[in-house]
Length: 257
Image (cartoon, rainbow, N blue to C red; front, top):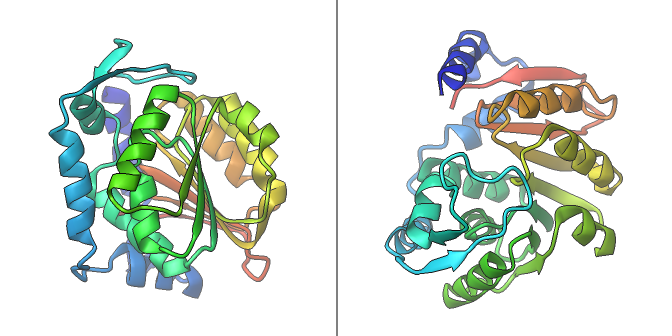
């Protein structure tokens, strides 16, 4: 925790708000999406989905294929505890909803479904999108598949399996948005990026969750943003976003949210 606090202080000192950003593309993204204060009606659905999970006292046996949880160490876990400690926070969920609404991606890939909080938000942001989500734990996959259906989410297809195996079997398309929230190991994160790089188009967005989760994750993030095909990268501390827009000069931003 101490290392995370120190990392955040360093981030705060180097980061900017919209007034310090001179790229029109990034300025518009920050001003019209990151800092969008509109109270969308959909927010009530996001709140309800999360609240239902936080009140769910059912327990399931969890298979961790990556590093696993810093907090929850037992294989049998209560849904409410998982939602509290491992799920996206409500502000991040709202931001993810705004992001997909802003960019309007048609084909989305998610690595790490978990309880479907992010999947649910992306589906509501772009109901006509095709969302493929990969989850390593079979019991979580089944629970979340059923839970999303109960919440009238029909455009999310959850594939159960280890990320590498599932990606090898998946017919890789051109993805407009790729959200990576799983495993949280340096080499694995870099490998997923390199494996999925051929599926990116000029407007594709990669979102990496928890880039300061560990030293290895931060190293992975710093390696990825140096890739020659990456033009714009945005560090929000909890997320790292990268873009491949050839019309943009290569530039890195640290943005306070």
